[in-house]
Length: 376
Image (cartoon, rainbow, N blue to C red; front, top):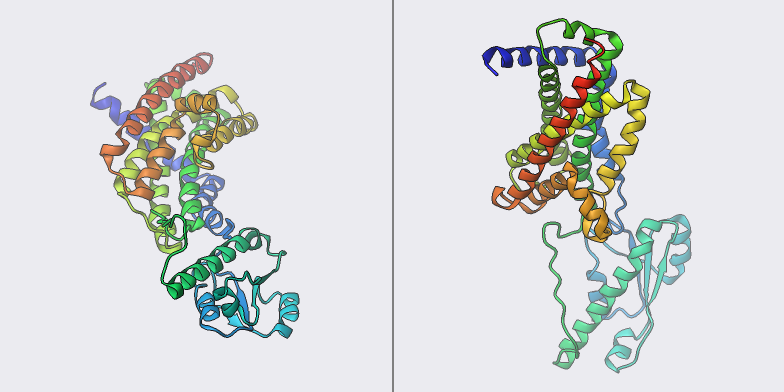
């Protein structure tokens, strides 16, 4: 390969850019995938305890009941409102509150006396996402405050083990942090396969592939041009989505190096764009290509660790998915974006992606040459 070879690849890649610009549906897909799709995935995920509304009926009006009321704070709860017992049913009927906590009279006196007074929690179960887990959280908060109050009053701690929980990387368990970044990672895979496959099928359907074959270009040059051009489009869109949509619009913090993430994404795009060309040579038409995408994308996204942890999957599935580039890309991206890992941590994943990409490129190039033999 000499300078002229790379110059031809560059010009063919520029041709791919112009072809993409003349395809308005693909441009709309790119814009939607890296803007509204990420925003919707982040904000539509259920927030079990995010600004949950709670009211407190304090019939005891004691230091302990006040301490319990002060224990509910943002971002899980909104500031508790004090209401009377007569306002409970009308407020729940109107949907004013998800939780109403009723602290009975003489609550502090009964607690200090060693009795077990009952605290009533009324839950609006029509708000299922919050009601499902909220009751347990309220119970834990009340039990913790009562335990600390009794220990301080009696001058000793209750028997048992004191478990101190510290949440790393996502202290408030914000599902938006997970949803936005994982949607970005999954969209990189999806769009790179679609763009390269559609680029090849578009030329086949329009008859321009035959025109290329009569020119002094090789199948390798045609394939490399599609890989680098469509990969660059997806890489630029991913950078824009990460910086402007995820960090600025959604206010999701990124712990690690964006440049390192883009390096991992570039290696991953080398593999997925090659896979897109392979699927296009198998499908031959856009409808068949769409059906193949369903069969390929779902396992790649669901079994790579982007939706559920790989450790929760059967051992056979974990072993099989090691041959997929998405498995290593998801692992590397999560380590960089969530935990701030450096290249000394993710280099095995980068190496695995590069090896898988090289294998996929070789198989796709062989298949591409065979598919155009009859056209030359």
